[in-house]
Amino acid sequence: MTKDKNANADSLMRIWNTLERVPYGRVVSYGQLADLAGLPGRARLAARALRLAPAERQLPWYRVIGASGKISIPKDSPGYREQMMRLRNEGVEVNNGRVALSLYQWQPDLAELLWQLDY
DNA sequence: ACTCTGACTCCTT
DNA sequence: GAAGGAGCCAGAG
Image 1 (cartoon, rainbow, N blue to C red):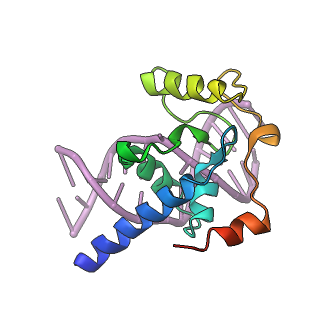
Image 2: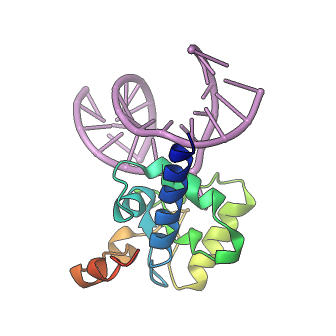
C-alpha cells in the first residue's frame, strides 16, 4: 500500500536529483535521465517526473529532450517555445525543434558517475 | 477492473 | 527519414 507510494515517490526524487546534475549547456534524453537515475527503461517516468517537478527546486527540465534530439513537448504549446528559448539562452542551438546530440548531449565520465553516489 | 493516454524508446520494415 | 509494433507504467475516466 503505502509501500508502493513510497517507491514511486522515491523514483521521482531519484530522477529529480539526477536532473539537478545535468550541466549548463548540455542536454540528456528522457531515457538517459532514467538510466542515470538507476531506472532503466523508464523514459516515460522521467517525462512524468518533469511534469510533476516542484517549481521551487528550479530544476533544468528544459535540458531534457527526446532520444532523437527533438523537443518532445507538443510543438504548438507555450512550453515548447519556452524550452527552445531557455536552451538557446545557454548556447544550445535548436533548429526545427531539434538539438545536435553529438554536440550537446551530456556524457558524464566515470568520475561524475561515482560522484553522484551520495543519495 | 478496464481502456486510453502520454514532455518515451527501441527494433524492424 | 517514416511507419508500425512492442515494451514501459502511472493517472484519469
